[in-house]
Length: 114
Image (tube, rainbow, N blue to C red):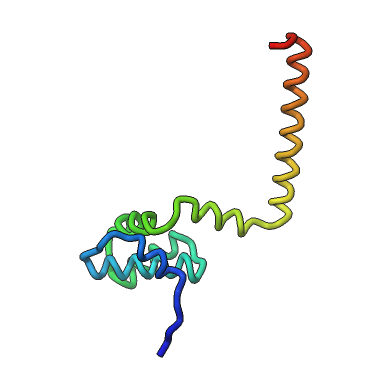
């Protein structure tokens, strides 16, 4: 027997009760592809909709978005960004912060304590 546990099953528990079996299977497949196979939402929706012969995709997508945390895709995108880009952004952010504080000091010098 295959007793492998999949990560997507944890997210399936967040869903409300789904009467339609095809919709339930399509949502499960979509979550599996997104979480366990690291596929895009668009690809997962298309595959699940085709395999389980379920239209419209929007109903699947709405349930998937209920199951996943709000910041799921944002976190995954940030984690998949190249390391150089992340470091570059951190340096840029630090420089902007310093420039902003210098601008504030300059304005205080021009207009006095305001």
